Amino acid sequence: MNQTSALPQNTTLLQDSFHDDLEKVSVRTVGRKATITKDELFQAALNLIGPQKSIASLSLREVAREAGIAPNSFYRHFKDIDELAIELIDRSGLVLRKILHEARIKAIKHGSIIRSSVEVFIKQLDADEGNLSLLLREGYTGSTSYKLAVEKQLNYFQQELQEDLIRIERINHSKLVHPELVAKAITQLVFNMGAKVIDLPTDERKQVAEQTMIMIRMLLEGSRHLDEAQIH
Image (tube, rainbow, N blue to C red; front, side):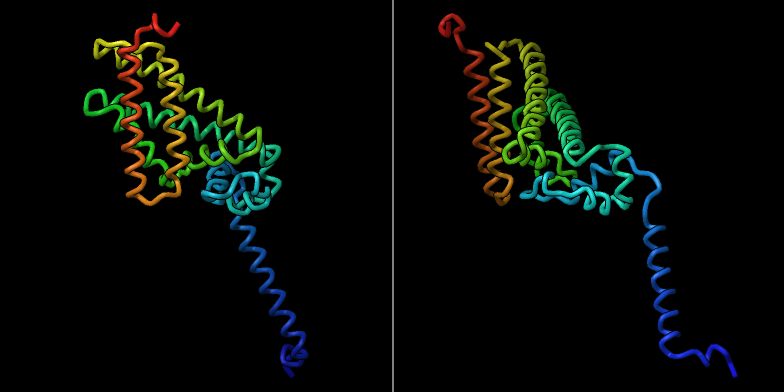
């Protein structure tokens, strides 16, 4: 008699179940990455957070699962989610500052600096990377440490915009009175606009963007014609 056929049916089912479990474990093991980079962890976090969800709501295990790693591998780069979040905010700020700076430099030769900057800013709201929506969300609804990290990035935006404005005004043979205040006002204005339009449909976004461009022009023109002696 065949020994296999002599086995009770329950034993055969147990063997089949055991082999299936082994295959599942094998698939999960093969699917996990042996190594992981910071950028991959950043992207995993961005994949998990939406317009209304803060990084603080994520668990370490969620991020690890999205990145395809074992939870222990997370600790090779970050001690906890908060450390990842603050570094991600810094990274997002750097990426956006580069994009906006390049847009302003190109616009010197090819068009309106104000329009190109605002339009690029608006486009970033829907960009796959999610850098701008991250800054807007954490700047307004994040924890105190996240808000401070965003504030630091806004200061960088302001400083770089001030340098670009001074350079551009010099090229156009004009000058801004208190360019640091102009840069601060524009930075706050544009980021407040972003927070307002992030959930609006495209047509309404365009309307708010057009209004913002007019306000920026008013700031620049006012600064160019301001009598510095009258403000002291």
